[in-house]
Image (cartoon, rainbow, N blue to C red):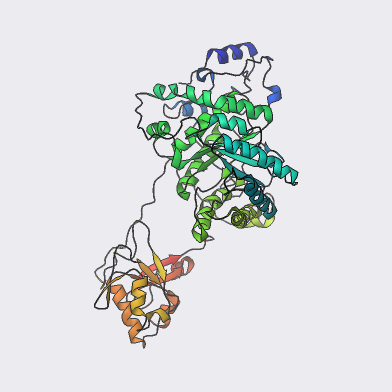
Length: 536
């Protein structure tokens, strides 16, 4: 059950209204914060709690209190059928504003040592010139906090007012110092108050034992909240899947639910002080975990009637195409949900290179807003209505079925896909020539014996051929036969197989064509592969 401290109960009794002394509505199923100007009808400077026992915490999810008091989880986005931005409050970060009434904010992170003031100033200026709206810098200790003040001053002198965000870990006191210099503080609930992760497995006999440890969270967080509120600083409560505290890991496990509950605790502390100038983030290096976590947090905010903006990002996405694709999958999915007010594409490259993918994702998201662009609304209206069966409260990998052998098969098809993720390599007829075949086997990861290929743990599962060598090319056809005999799939467009059949091939068709042909295979093909483009 939710416990109300003596200060909370006394203030609520004195007010005699539906708004408690901390500006939090106590009307059932609504916990929206009211503006600060109307939050203290008692005009008491002592209205804000200073102990964990006096804070109005979000009702427990494990006991069922949250469902009982606020109803079950419902929507996680504004509209399943139209791209519509989730409505949020405006959060101020110096000259930049986050929220649904403002453009999506593009941000990055400096890679220079923060203590190197001149180098950091130069890099931030390059980022600002590129088009970024905000730059985050790492602050490990007092030396970096002092450097941050010099960086901020140096940028002002050079005519740059781009906001800075201090990335804080393990150092609550230093966070208060740097708040004097920068416009935004990012805290990680996993290590802001818990100190350096000890990986100690904690055992909680009951939820009451878990809740008791909130006291030290309040002690560490309260001074920073008061400082940020007094200076109108912005804060990001940024949970990271890879750095959940041992406390949260022991109680909720390594799960999206643990990420969300960790962030809600820190948000409750902010709200207890009538401080609402903050955003959330739920970052993970796995885009699937990241999407699941953001959707779960959004669903919780919908049912609690919270309207805080969201910062989107995939942690340590990588470099090159891999980093950009991972970010596009995670960030792009959420932007299509209408979720996200500020974005960073995290690449292991110089920060200037993050701008193009970051900006492109934001541009695509803004171009698909149905309320703003009639053409986008028309396209979205053409999608047939469907029932959303996804469960945002659980995380499980989709289970597929591997190809099974049929009586008519002359080869083993069990290896053409892999349950842990299939590797498909593109091959051209040139690569199948007799003088190239041995090199091709090596490129595909095959072991060879007497010139014959064999599959190994690192071998490609299947190959894709946009065109096939003619039947008259005996050497190339022999190479393909040898690959098929060791359970490597030969994926070829169906129209190519119609021209010149390839034994034991997998025919590739677009979904509409496969339906029109009722799944009929061209000569020589033993299986069907279907391609989709998202508008079926």
